[in-house]
Length: 325
Image 1 (cartoon, one colour):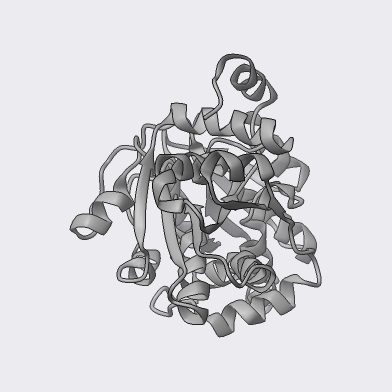
Image 2 (cartoon, rainbow, N blue to C red; image 1 turned 45 degrees about the vertical axis):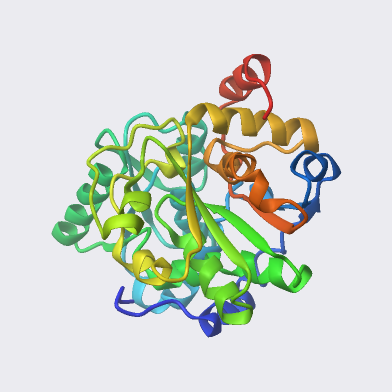
């Protein structure tokens, strides 16, 4: 598929039809405690309960199903900090496709182990995501593998957009939806769904302060920051990608930056309020909500808990040492 094609609501509806054969809708959990703290009606979309513990499995399944004839005799290669990798590896295991994953150094071992359990080959290269991505693209060209871009592939956007279709169908009177942004597929899916079905719904992205490429691009035009200094590996991208930028510019209502410490505190806050486990990037939307709490008062708000792949020792340290928001 070409990145020239933009994701559509029709494509998201088709993806929902496909994905429903493999995944159940995730819960949209009302939190009385968080609602009280933020003075709004607060709902958490629990994508951490997916079989790969992250939302991106939706995109991987839809991509593999739509491309199954083209990839039946080829190796699929991609780059990821973990959750996109598990999405492609999980889908590869469903459709009998051989998968290679290029990951930068420092990705939590729990994510690498999960990939190996799914039968994928893990290659470590680079110190952050974009170095791994460039290496994967090169390997794909040289070896004849089918390279899957984690952010510029519209089928992935349409697959992950199904989580927002589920939110809208369950809570059509939602006022604000807050979604973390790394590569951009989740927020792209949000804008495609809500701005088509009800443009009054506000879509807000949350990005790590140490990896602000999209935030700066959204303000100034596409730029590459050359840095991704954040412990939230799911948000550690150093550039803005063309496809999500085309979707989001003019459709996204705001971008909020949060620190790693704010995300750690959000991990603890989610755990204390709901018992749910979130990784740092999965808690970013909650951290962002507390940062803009004055704008949420009295509204129906949905926060994406986009992933729960966190090292047990990291979670224990956060629960022991961090203060809740």
